[in-house]
Length: 252
Image (cartoon, rainbow, N blue to C red):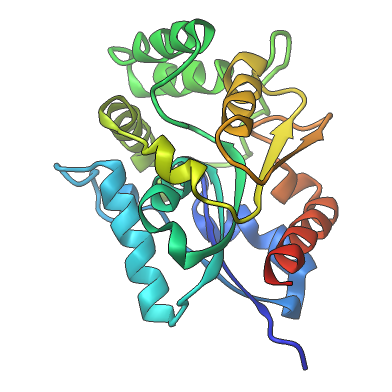
Protein backbone atom coordinates (compact mmCIF):
# COMPACT_ATOMS: atom_id res chain seq x y z
CA UNK A 1 0.00 0.00 0.00
CA UNK A 2 1.34 3.45 -0.91
CA UNK A 3 2.42 5.74 1.90
CA UNK A 4 -0.24 8.29 2.75
CA UNK A 5 0.60 11.94 2.27
CA UNK A 6 1.74 13.56 5.53
CA UNK A 7 -0.18 16.83 5.77
CA UNK A 8 -0.57 19.60 8.36
CA UNK A 9 -3.48 22.04 7.96
CA UNK A 10 -3.71 25.42 9.71
CA UNK A 11 -7.01 27.33 9.85
CA UNK A 12 -7.79 31.01 9.56
CA UNK A 13 -8.55 33.50 12.27
CA UNK A 14 -12.23 32.69 12.72
CA UNK A 15 -13.05 28.96 12.68
CA UNK A 16 -11.02 26.43 14.69
CA UNK A 17 -9.11 23.87 12.64
CA UNK A 18 -11.42 20.88 13.01
CA UNK A 19 -14.64 22.43 11.66
CA UNK A 20 -12.69 24.49 9.13
CA UNK A 21 -11.27 21.41 7.40
CA UNK A 22 -13.90 18.75 8.16
CA UNK A 23 -15.36 18.69 4.63
CA UNK A 24 -11.95 18.57 2.93
CA UNK A 25 -10.71 15.79 5.20
CA UNK A 26 -13.81 13.71 4.50
CA UNK A 27 -13.05 13.90 0.78
CA UNK A 28 -9.33 13.14 1.20
CA UNK A 29 -10.09 10.20 3.48
CA UNK A 30 -7.37 7.60 3.91
CA UNK A 31 -5.20 9.12 1.19
CA UNK A 32 -3.68 11.43 3.80
CA UNK A 33 -2.26 11.25 7.28
CA UNK A 34 -3.53 14.68 8.23
CA UNK A 35 -3.10 16.83 11.32
CA UNK A 36 -5.30 19.87 11.85
CA UNK A 37 -3.53 22.35 14.08
CA UNK A 38 -5.20 25.29 15.79
CA UNK A 39 -3.40 28.61 15.87
CA UNK A 40 -1.16 29.47 18.80
CA UNK A 41 -2.82 32.88 19.12
CA UNK A 42 -5.88 31.08 20.55
CA UNK A 43 -3.99 28.78 22.92
CA UNK A 44 -5.21 30.78 25.94
CA UNK A 45 -8.09 33.04 26.84
CA UNK A 46 -6.08 35.99 25.47
CA UNK A 47 -3.31 36.05 22.85
CA UNK A 48 0.16 35.47 24.31
CA UNK A 49 1.53 38.86 25.45
CA UNK A 50 4.64 38.41 23.29
CA UNK A 51 2.73 36.99 20.31
CA UNK A 52 4.43 37.18 16.92
CA UNK A 53 4.54 35.15 13.73
CA UNK A 54 7.50 33.40 15.34
CA UNK A 55 5.06 32.05 17.94
CA UNK A 56 3.10 30.35 15.16
CA UNK A 57 6.27 29.10 13.44
CA UNK A 58 7.46 27.50 16.67
CA UNK A 59 4.04 25.90 17.13
CA UNK A 60 4.12 24.34 13.66
CA UNK A 61 7.61 22.99 14.25
CA UNK A 62 6.66 21.57 17.63
CA UNK A 63 3.58 19.85 16.19
CA UNK A 64 5.58 18.35 13.32
CA UNK A 65 8.21 17.00 15.71
CA UNK A 66 5.60 15.51 18.06
CA UNK A 67 3.89 13.80 15.11
CA UNK A 68 7.16 12.52 13.66
CA UNK A 69 6.68 14.54 10.44
CA UNK A 70 10.28 14.95 9.26
CA UNK A 71 9.06 16.23 5.88
CA UNK A 72 5.44 17.08 5.18
CA UNK A 73 2.97 19.09 3.13
CA UNK A 74 1.77 22.30 4.78
CA UNK A 75 -1.65 23.83 4.05
CA UNK A 76 -2.58 27.21 5.53
CA UNK A 77 -5.65 29.40 5.23
CA UNK A 78 -5.79 33.12 6.10
CA UNK A 79 -3.89 33.57 9.39
CA UNK A 80 -2.76 29.97 9.05
CA UNK A 81 -1.52 30.80 5.55
CA UNK A 82 0.51 33.74 6.85
CA UNK A 83 1.97 31.45 9.50
CA UNK A 84 2.75 28.84 6.83
CA UNK A 85 4.62 31.39 4.74
CA UNK A 86 6.63 32.46 7.77
CA UNK A 87 7.41 28.80 8.53
CA UNK A 88 8.55 28.19 4.94
CA UNK A 89 10.99 31.09 5.15
CA UNK A 90 12.60 29.62 8.27
CA UNK A 91 12.16 25.84 7.93
CA UNK A 92 11.60 25.27 4.23
CA UNK A 93 13.77 22.16 4.33
CA UNK A 94 11.00 20.42 6.32
CA UNK A 95 8.37 20.92 3.59
CA UNK A 96 7.49 18.83 0.56
CA UNK A 97 5.02 21.46 -0.66
CA UNK A 98 3.15 24.56 0.48
CA UNK A 99 -0.53 25.26 -0.16
CA UNK A 100 -1.79 28.77 0.53
CA UNK A 101 -5.54 29.31 0.78
CA UNK A 102 -5.68 33.11 0.66
CA UNK A 103 -3.04 33.82 3.31
CA UNK A 104 -3.72 36.92 5.38
CA UNK A 105 -0.18 38.27 4.94
CA UNK A 106 2.74 37.82 2.55
CA UNK A 107 5.32 40.24 3.85
CA UNK A 108 5.38 44.01 4.11
CA UNK A 109 6.84 44.79 0.68
CA UNK A 110 3.39 45.66 -0.61
CA UNK A 111 2.20 47.61 -3.61
CA UNK A 112 0.77 51.08 -2.84
CA UNK A 113 -2.75 49.72 -3.40
CA UNK A 114 -2.16 46.92 -0.88
CA UNK A 115 -0.69 49.34 1.65
CA UNK A 116 -3.72 51.62 1.34
CA UNK A 117 -5.95 48.65 2.12
CA UNK A 118 -3.83 47.77 5.16
CA UNK A 119 -4.35 51.31 6.44
CA UNK A 120 -8.09 50.67 6.32
CA UNK A 121 -7.60 47.52 8.41
CA UNK A 122 -5.54 49.46 10.96
CA UNK A 123 -8.27 52.11 11.15
CA UNK A 124 -10.65 49.46 12.53
CA UNK A 125 -8.60 49.06 15.70
CA UNK A 126 -10.51 51.49 18.02
CA UNK A 127 -13.93 49.99 17.14
CA UNK A 128 -15.80 47.75 19.57
CA UNK A 129 -15.50 44.00 18.84
CA UNK A 130 -18.72 43.56 16.83
CA UNK A 131 -18.02 46.56 14.58
CA UNK A 132 -14.35 45.60 14.30
CA UNK A 133 -15.19 42.09 13.08
CA UNK A 134 -17.84 43.34 10.64
CA UNK A 135 -15.36 45.78 9.10
CA UNK A 136 -12.63 43.14 9.07
CA UNK A 137 -14.86 40.77 7.09
CA UNK A 138 -16.10 43.36 4.61
CA UNK A 139 -12.63 44.59 3.66
CA UNK A 140 -11.71 41.10 2.45
CA UNK A 141 -14.56 40.86 -0.05
CA UNK A 142 -14.79 42.22 -3.58
CA UNK A 143 -16.98 45.33 -4.02
CA UNK A 144 -20.66 44.44 -3.95
CA UNK A 145 -20.14 41.00 -2.35
CA UNK A 146 -22.18 40.56 0.80
CA UNK A 147 -20.68 38.65 3.74
CA UNK A 148 -22.36 35.40 4.72
CA UNK A 149 -25.09 35.72 7.36
CA UNK A 150 -24.13 34.71 10.90
CA UNK A 151 -25.13 31.16 11.88
CA UNK A 152 -28.36 30.71 13.75
CA UNK A 153 -28.32 30.37 17.50
CA UNK A 154 -25.93 31.71 20.13
CA UNK A 155 -22.29 32.15 19.07
CA UNK A 156 -19.95 29.29 20.05
CA UNK A 157 -17.69 29.95 23.05
CA UNK A 158 -14.53 30.16 20.96
CA UNK A 159 -15.92 33.13 18.99
CA UNK A 160 -15.29 35.46 21.95
CA UNK A 161 -11.53 35.05 21.41
CA UNK A 162 -11.60 36.06 17.76
CA UNK A 163 -11.47 39.89 17.89
CA UNK A 164 -8.41 39.89 20.15
CA UNK A 165 -6.76 37.18 18.06
CA UNK A 166 -7.33 39.04 14.80
CA UNK A 167 -5.94 42.27 16.32
CA UNK A 168 -2.88 40.35 17.54
CA UNK A 169 -2.30 39.00 14.03
CA UNK A 170 -2.56 42.46 12.47
CA UNK A 171 0.04 43.74 14.95
CA UNK A 172 2.23 40.71 14.23
CA UNK A 173 2.03 41.38 10.50
CA UNK A 174 3.20 44.96 11.03
CA UNK A 175 6.20 43.66 12.99
CA UNK A 176 6.83 40.68 10.70
CA UNK A 177 9.85 40.25 8.47
CA UNK A 178 9.48 37.72 5.67
CA UNK A 179 12.81 36.44 4.30
CA UNK A 180 12.14 36.76 0.56
CA UNK A 181 15.53 35.29 -0.39
CA UNK A 182 14.69 32.13 1.55
CA UNK A 183 11.35 31.87 -0.28
CA UNK A 184 13.08 32.37 -3.63
CA UNK A 185 15.28 29.39 -2.77
CA UNK A 186 12.25 27.20 -1.97
CA UNK A 187 11.90 25.11 -5.13
CA UNK A 188 9.14 22.78 -3.97
CA UNK A 189 5.60 23.22 -5.38
CA UNK A 190 3.60 26.16 -4.03
CA UNK A 191 -0.14 26.26 -4.67
CA UNK A 192 -2.37 29.31 -4.15
CA UNK A 193 -6.19 29.01 -4.06
CA UNK A 194 -7.80 32.35 -4.93
CA UNK A 195 -11.48 33.25 -4.51
CA UNK A 196 -12.97 35.13 -7.44
CA UNK A 197 -15.23 37.11 -5.08
CA UNK A 198 -12.51 38.05 -2.59
CA UNK A 199 -11.02 41.53 -2.58
CA UNK A 200 -8.70 41.52 -5.62
CA UNK A 201 -6.59 44.31 -4.13
CA UNK A 202 -5.82 42.01 -1.22
CA UNK A 203 -5.52 38.42 -2.37
CA UNK A 204 -5.16 38.89 -6.12
CA UNK A 205 -2.28 41.32 -5.81
CA UNK A 206 -0.71 39.11 -3.15
CA UNK A 207 -0.81 36.14 -5.52
CA UNK A 208 0.89 38.25 -8.20
CA UNK A 209 3.67 39.19 -5.78
CA UNK A 210 4.22 35.60 -4.65
CA UNK A 211 4.30 34.39 -8.26
CA UNK A 212 7.38 36.56 -8.73
CA UNK A 213 9.04 35.10 -5.62
CA UNK A 214 8.47 31.34 -5.70
CA UNK A 215 10.08 29.47 -8.62
CA UNK A 216 7.42 26.71 -8.65
CA UNK A 217 4.13 28.56 -8.13
CA UNK A 218 0.58 27.79 -9.30
CA UNK A 219 -2.58 29.86 -8.83
CA UNK A 220 -6.04 28.29 -9.11
CA UNK A 221 -9.07 30.59 -9.08
CA UNK A 222 -12.41 29.48 -7.66
CA UNK A 223 -14.71 32.04 -9.33
CA UNK A 224 -17.70 31.71 -6.98
CA UNK A 225 -15.78 31.60 -3.73
CA UNK A 226 -14.64 34.32 -1.36
CA UNK A 227 -12.60 34.40 1.81
CA UNK A 228 -15.50 33.48 4.08
CA UNK A 229 -16.95 30.66 1.98
CA UNK A 230 -13.60 29.15 0.98
CA UNK A 231 -13.11 26.11 -1.26
CA UNK A 232 -11.97 23.81 1.54
CA UNK A 233 -15.47 24.15 3.00
CA UNK A 234 -17.67 24.72 -0.07
CA UNK A 235 -15.84 22.95 -2.93
CA UNK A 236 -13.81 20.30 -1.09
CA UNK A 237 -13.88 17.77 -3.95
CA UNK A 238 -12.27 20.18 -6.41
CA UNK A 239 -9.72 21.43 -3.89
CA UNK A 240 -8.86 17.87 -2.83
CA UNK A 241 -8.11 16.94 -6.45
CA UNK A 242 -5.85 19.98 -6.80
CA UNK A 243 -3.99 19.32 -3.55
CA UNK A 244 -3.50 15.64 -4.36
CA UNK A 245 -2.01 16.59 -7.73
CA UNK A 246 0.40 19.00 -6.01
CA UNK A 247 1.39 16.44 -3.39
CA UNK A 248 1.93 13.67 -5.93
CA UNK A 249 4.08 15.97 -8.05
CA UNK A 250 6.11 16.95 -4.99
CA UNK A 251 6.72 13.35 -4.02
CA UNK A 252 7.56 12.04 -7.51
